[in-house]
Image (cartoon, rainbow, N blue to C red; front, side):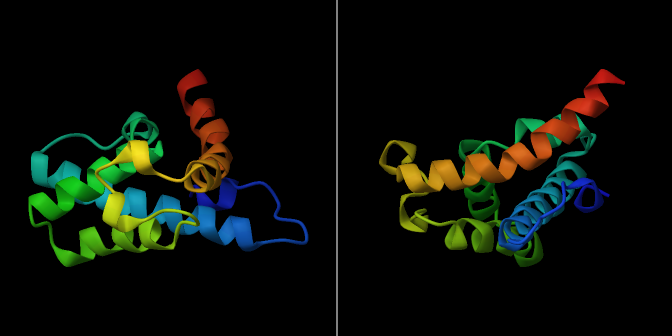
Amino acid sequence: MMDSMLPPAGNDAGWQEKARAMIQALVFSLVYKCRREGTVMSQRTIQAHLPLRAIAKLYIQSVEQQWHEDAQLPLKNYLGTLSGFDLAKVDSPEEWATTALDQHGFLIQQFTRMLALFNDT
């Protein structure tokens, strides 16, 4: 559903594919986490995990708690392909490249607006 709410891509659809990959990895892993912990999945759960630090913490949790590979791999793939992000420094946010923060920030802006609509209704 969230994919269909993305704004039109125009001539460069690359950012839209990256945004889709990010949100799909996040949602898939959050569904796994919520089922594992017996908690409720909601748009607020997604919003709380949109920042890069939160996604990195979720990935660290998935490794430490030995989540099923299908729940862990999408996060690893997203972080590993995020421009400027060094997966070896996942637990050291003070060492993250500004490029990675900027790239991720742009991607989450695409979803922040639409998720805010759910809060307003």
